[in-house]
Amino acid sequence: DAKTTQPTSMDCAEGRAANLPCNHSTISGNEYVYWYRQIHSQGPQYIIHGLKNNETNEMASLIITEDRKSSTLILPHATLRDTAVYYCIVRGGLDFGNEKLTFGTGTRLTIIP
Amino acid sequence: NAGVTQTPKFQVLKTGQSMTLQCAQDMNHNSMYWYRQDPGMGLRLIYYSASEGTTDKGEVPNGYNVSRLNKREFSLRLESAAPSQTSVYFCASRRDRPYNYGYTFGSGTRLTVV
Image (cartoon, rainbow over all chains, first blue to last red; front, side, top):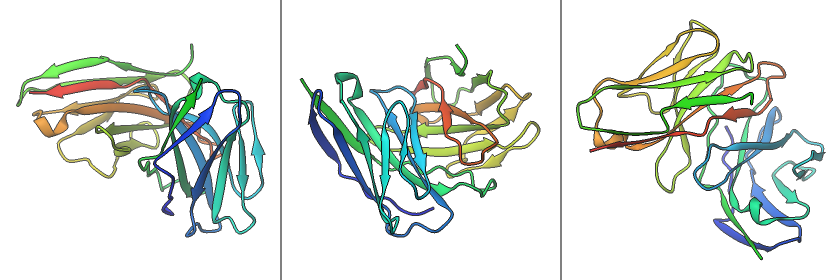
């Protein structure tokens, strides 16, 4: 799986959009970008994933650059409950035998009141 | 609520003791996983099961065994606990199709080995 690079920590004001970047310059053609978050010590929560098109769901938007070497997770109106560690993960989506979902240390996002 | 249920939530063991961590999911998923998370670190895969009756080693399998009892349940056993196994253990499951779907995680078991 491709390696990802994320900032260690970020702050965002409550009510503003939180933009979390991720670099994955070695991503290959069949690899998806996934985002999870972990609130305090709970189990990780799936947020969104994408291959090459921008994606949006009820939680967030995912913007993937045209060359697919980086992406940005956008939380449109951050609330205090969005304070968490956010993980950007890249893995093959069609390789059923490759079950290793590699979590790095992620970005610690703090929402400021 | 549908999801992944782990028991127990907390456990303290003495070195050399054994125990089994239980995990059950009610989403009819074929794939199930065990991860551990040490303080300040990301998750590391211990074992996984792609379907009932099959299990495979992950990144850090030493000191652990697993059993896929049926489609719903996937247990993790520590035969002789060591302080290095102090960690938070997460169980997860995943839909099979589409293959790129996200994982659902349990709330974790916090294990301390003294």
